[in-house]
Length: 144
Ligand SMILES: [Zn+2]
Image 1 (tube, rainbow, N blue to C red):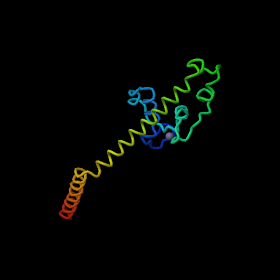
Image 2: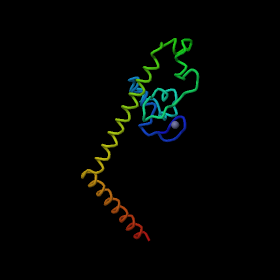
Image 3: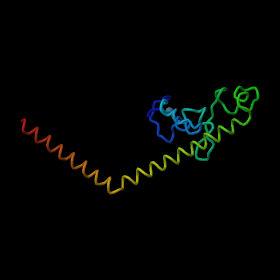
Image 4: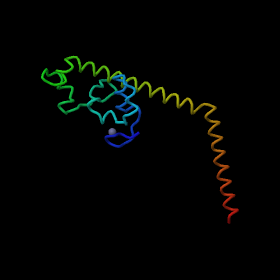
């Protein structure tokens, strides 16, 4: 699926919509939302704190978590002083879980592609394509 912000293809492991769905335990949002790169969503990405994730900052006052320590900020007023920590925990854990799921999925695909079943199937497909081309050539020659 393509990113609704930059238009480029989104690798599942970089999908902010999936990360958010995991973070807030809202899997149904995946049914209705499109895809967006986590880096195209700084309001979410700023909460991922991990050595393998280059930090992102959101400079918009309403969303910038660095502003949330100010007791007069609307987010602080609504959620209190621990909200930054909660968001960091939720988004970082969600990002780690998504990376793990994608690693497993990729390992499964690699294992499948080296299985005898897959290799036999590829041989059958190749043979069928060759036969189709042969029949097309034969038909073309008959029409000439
Ligand atoms: Zn994007």
